[in-house]
Amino acid sequence: MKLRKPKTLGAYIPTVSMADIAMLLIIFFMITTTIPVDRTPVQLPKSIERSGFPEGSAVIAITPEGLINVSDGKEQSHPIADVSDIFSFAANVLVDDPTHTFVIKADGQVPYQLIDAVMTQLRSARVEKIVLLTDQETVS
Amino acid sequence: MKIKRKKSTPEIPSSSMADIAFLLIIFFMLTSVFSMDKGIQFKLPKDEPATITQPEEAIHIHVLDDGSIVVDNKPMVLSDIREYVKSKVEINRTKPVIVHCEPGTPYARLIDVLDELKQLELEMYPENKDDDPTNDKHIFISIPTQEEIAAWGQYLGS
Image 1 (tube, each protein chain N blue to C red):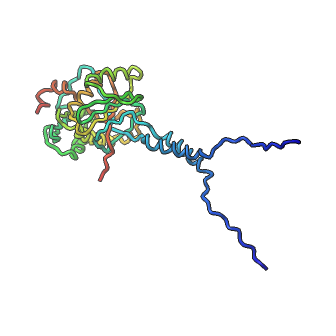
Image 2 (cartoon, helix red, strand yellow; image 1 turned 90 degrees about the horizontal axis):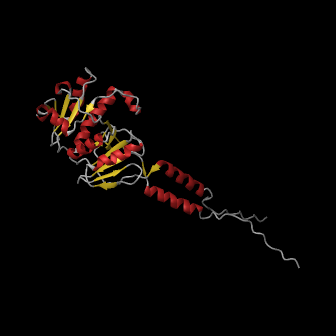
Image 3 (tube, chains in turn blue, cyan; image 1 turned 45 degrees about the horizontal axis):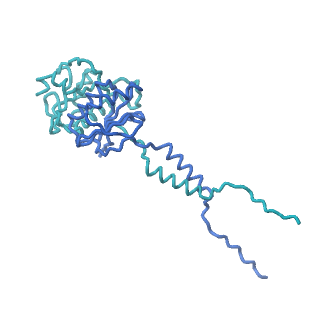
């Protein structure tokens, strides 16, 4: 008796659910990521103790050259001409929310004199909460 | 004669859906970053005429231009600050800690000192770890402005 030739199955990668997986990944990325309002390149100082701050906080970025960029937390950051302009910037932000948090994103090499000037302006504008942005220091 | 018309079933073309989806994934992966920004929280005092704390009532941490640290007129390394402040604050929990930086001090040095104090604060008040704003037990850290430093005068100038 002649045996029947076994039917060969063609190998293939199942791609039916690929679109579903891709959509799931898109939704994951859309929910978990935020687009930063400030992209000023600075070398942040490091600290072990760090705590979070509310999303949408105002950002004051200071480069080692002394350039200052500010953002109210909603719009992209823009440069300001002088430290004294921080007062009006902060006062405008506080009109909508008097307890708004301000984040100081300064390079570790910035002289304290400039940080002091910024904090004095924020104090004059009646800012209550500030966060000194740092990178995580790893304990060896 | 009756012409037989072939009926085509309507359908949404979805063959390119996976391509579009992957394109969007790549876009999101490249343009966005995870929000992992954190830092040292600090409450600014109200801008009122400063109530002058007598220097002998507080712990005075003086950070010099070269980054060296003098605590209550005694030179100290960074790692010793925590124990020194702890020994003082445990006796009097309301004792203020004044962090006085010279104008030329690198900002990173101020952060180093604040980090030590914040670590001590967490050691003394572990409930603060929850980031609960109702937790009001803190070490009283003060960073005086240049004007306030001028008001303190001779002692801080030492």
